[in-house]
Amino acid sequence: MTLPTRSDLDAVPAYRQGRPAPAGASKLSSNESPHPPLPSVVAAVQQQLGSIHRYPRMSAPEVIGRLAERYGVDPALVTVGAGSVELAAQLIGAVAGAGDEVMFAWRSFEAYPSLVRIAGATPVEVPLDADHRHDLDAMLAAITPRTRLVFVCNPNNPTGTVVGAAELERFVDAVPRDVLVVIDEAYVHFDRSEYFDGPDRGAGLELHRRYPHVAVLHTFSKAYGLAGLRIGYAIAPAEIADAQRKVAVPFGVTDLAQAAAVASLDAEAELAIRIDEVVAE
Image (cartoon, one colour):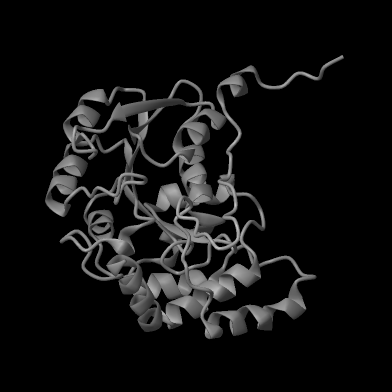
């Protein structure tokens, strides 16, 4: 006898990781940092190795404290997860379920449709415009009473296009206040437009400060080069952050990842040089 599984999972493909690069080749498809970890980051991780027989600190106090201080927000608004993909799943799970809709541009981050379906909600894909940019007017027109969350991946993965600060604010202002707008800024450190004015001053964070229905996603995987340790963070409205903690996987972020994240924040100037090199290439 075959054991039954959820029938709605028939529409959910298993996430497939890209193939490793053969010897002598460079793999670009996963957008990983070409640089190894900084020595200070390696040292911070090594210092934690002696305690890996203990469960990690779920509250991530040092990481969250540092991020809250850096961005000038209440620590209660900051959550961490195993990369921004887990945080995206948390945000979906916090607001959407059966009968609800979650919207995003398409193509965009490959995980969005699966994450929405796993939560039991309905993904709504709005095609990019002819310039491979978010069609914000079409996205606004697609909002219904069932819409609970809208992702704006900015810069967009995989097209690299950017929604400017002014047009993004017009969009956010037009979205109903009971719909969560999640600005996914996984690649924002590589943007050289007016949208990103330094690590503390991205347009997404400014919109979070000014609008009650905006959350921002950041990751340590890309610019910080910690893809293998799986850590990212969200800054969200208080009620959303509280709900995220309820749906988060317990002990999902290791102390090794937390130590590496703090050390990376301490090494921002060194990492900025590496980021500039990647952008120049």
